[in-house]
Length: 298
Length: 338
Image (tube, rainbow over all chains, first blue to last red; front, side, top):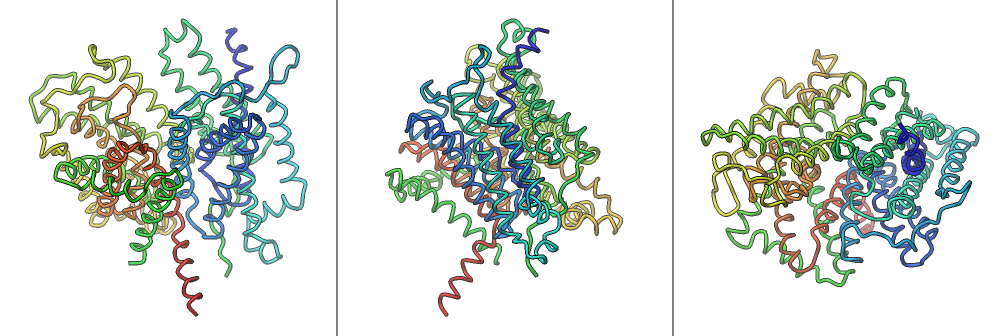
């Protein structure tokens, strides 16, 4: 049972991308736009962040590059969903396919391999505390969660974002700019998913590949459901999902255990846990009334 | 007519973006695309290969299309396809007379596809879980399960890079070159679903549920039952896509990295969208992506990775999400003329 504790440091990393992407998506969904392209954003941002760090030698420039990539894809998705009133789910599916293809192509062109490892020089350096090396995201992520919560619950901007997601007609009548706010919310969500992607390649897995997030973008969507659109609950949900993700990785790598239970079965754990958690959590969730619906001014 | 033009515009836009990327990379897009179409349509042999690659795409395209008709975004074809492929392969462990063996493999694969799709319907109907989340989770579980079976249980003792090959009694007979009579499965599935959705009461109920669930319910249609049928039928189609890839194409096995099954399930999404989620339109969409897949192999000889095709595909799907983009462009042109 010692392994349940040994997993904690890994879990502390595994939870980060699921929290970051989910918290960004919470803002987007409060405004009424669903983005199921989180997986594709994370894939591409992880890759661009890798390039940024590799080209400049500074991993934080890499993180920024990931953020900008995410924000730009968010802008495209926002433009399609809000301005063109397109189908949000189809756009998201397209972003996922695009992310997979672009990274496979780009990594091959740049490095001649589909899943190249990043040299240690390009990783985000750990922060030493109590003798253990912690990811700086242990501090950054809760700060972003708190910031997002404050934005949504304690500012006029947040109130407006929630208004356009709940009742865009009423918001428009009182002079709230529906399109602009929704666009902002989707770009915000994209930027956070972009940071999540940069975290994957620069701080945790140290590689880029077309399937790097391995479903974590969708686990983040499940976390949004679990959190009932509350950023602090997303922090808790992220820990839950991250813990089982880490447990699967740890168990698979422990000699002996991998022999008695096949490695491949251990790798199924995070997905099965996500299915179980979502199916129990969802009954209580309440989503904005205008979620997924484009707004057309009469 | 308008929707047809929008589809063509999305296809051209995808191809254009591909050309721009190749040009930026310093490759000649014209020569590359010429090689692509030459490689896909250049001679009878190439055409047979293109058709052969289109066949599983028809089936995974149908999975997504039937889902959309019922109002679902069923992106679970990938997992159901994998489960279908490995189930069909496993039937190869039995010794049975030709014909019966093939039929049994297809039957078992279809059942396996339904079983893999069933939780999607149950979670959606009983617990309100979005099919987008449940299908992706099940896709990953299917991926690891298939990998386990392929690597640990069904691998060829002599050749580690693939499983055993299915016996001759289970293979589809060859028509010409790479093309086999698996053609019949894809064509019949497409024709059947067209007949079912447009000329059968149950199919009508599925479409009504998708168009307006409230109105459908008011008219006495059981919307949950429609969703269940759409998901199960989709499961059968996707599983058959995996099955015919194993039973109807070299190497008549599954490679240990699952590469010969590739992304057939996800490719079906773009196929269906191009086919406007119509069972017969899906045939055209599958032929288009079959062309790209076959031609990409030829482009690969010129040093252009196959992922290029996936970029084109992604751009096409994103463009299909916003048909108004092209309408707006036309309006602007008209304004400009004034």
